[in-house]
Length: 290
Image (cartoon, rainbow, N blue to C red):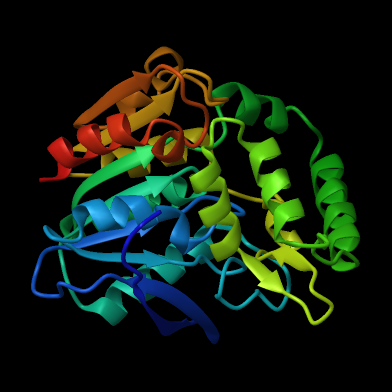
């Protein structure tokens, strides 16, 4: 369990109040840790503690996650998250920054780096390229009415959903372990304790809006994403667990879109490499960002 705790601060983006963890050392270069979907800022605590002496470490809660506000319309398009990240960077007022990001956080960060290459020093992205080319191609074969109707039906279904409640912290922790069997007991306990909302009757629910499950009805095409990635001027490290679910970017052609990207795979790790093989992840990330 991390020995220290960060200060929780807030900023505003598009009328939403969003939270971030600030680990201090503000005279040092800025390192921003961006979590994935249905996760939260404190999922980076081990990474932050390991790097806080060398960097000013900041870890935001994405909109709809953790202690950040939920979107009023339940919509969480990647473009909104990129806008929030830009608002955070303006709030912090420190360029260029280094980023370590996971999954959805990687998608957001790499788009931001393509939009503002001069503001980004280095990026480590863990399974952060988004849907595989095969998945994107399959989606494009569907008629537009089917895609739009599916999105409408999903949004209507999500509108009636409330976060699932667990009778106590132990039950929520068991669900956490079920979602990621690679977690140690210490990791599962910490991630659960920092990632739930407690209710008056003693029950708990994970702190994210059910609306974050929705895929956007419209998003950038693969060619548009590649054009954006090609604008990234800094070195990029793409990390994967061999037990993960993401497509290999060396094999599907996406890695070639970057000017300067290295791809590494790790045994014994799934989607959450930074938890599953923390020491190996940290060694690779530390060597890259220092």
